[in-house]
Length: 380
Image (cartoon, rainbow, N blue to C red; front, side, top):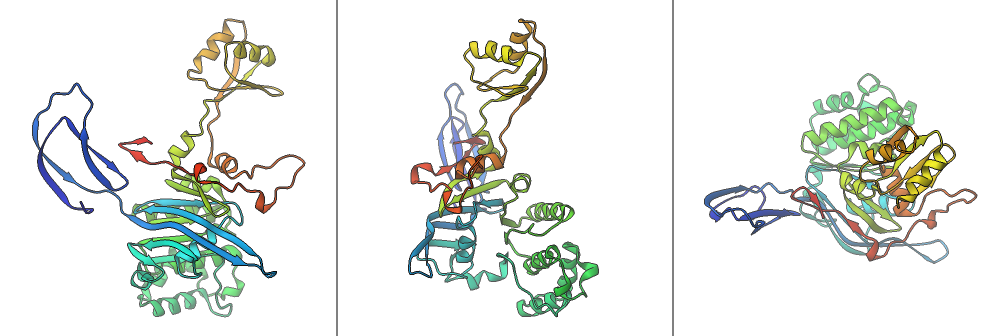
């Protein structure tokens, strides 16, 4: 069934509709419910893929005649309406992926599609519906910001009224008549985002949009992306500011050394790494740790506290230690964040006494690719 279509039929209530990655099936429901004939109308609103990348490969030749593999069978899917984070260590292939997707570099193998059209061959058919900034865009330094955008609007057939709208949207309304060469790095980045927004795109691709922005600018960028998502714009954003990605994005894909490591909803990705750990502070923390360890739970002792894992009911710790005359001062859940998950999956977590090199990142095999999909609200 195509997206947006309606389907009406008589079925029994002892069947359920299961939607999985845009495809629906009618399957038996759990036993125990009496069947009843009803008229069932299904309005199929499953998301369609805005970006599809399958088996993407790209190798660059080095100055010494060698070869450097940038992409090694990379896969990624971005569904309509998502704010999708694209993460990876330096040199992992993020920018190469975006450049290949936009036809700026030729891929050696693989399949790509943007808004249902094959890329890069059919990109001209959807170019007017895509806005993008990749790496650090360059502008003519002697042009003003306003003139720069007006030239781009003219080239793209966009009314000049739109220039004033995007200047205001990115906070450059009062600085639009200044020459670009006098802009700070953050202001140039705002101008780049404004240029990507000119066409009111359905798909916005942003490579390090917070580069050079001050804290207020980062928050404004966060709010901008949320507003765009609320307006049904699909956003693919690459960034190294993982705390921002966790706040902004609903889905994430992580790449390491040219291969996908993980993809899925941010909430499900984080919950998958939750170890049920709690930080416990108590006066005699070493003795308290031995009590908890004696009950069979894993415990890690630190200078002034200990961490207990696999804890289903935190109240149990209070009751157990209270029974031994030890009263808890702190019992805090240690929930994973996107940064810790990223460092663990890519093998880039700093180690004392060592200097991590770019190529020290994990090179995942197929068995390490973790995809999280949601079926009827549950991660599978």
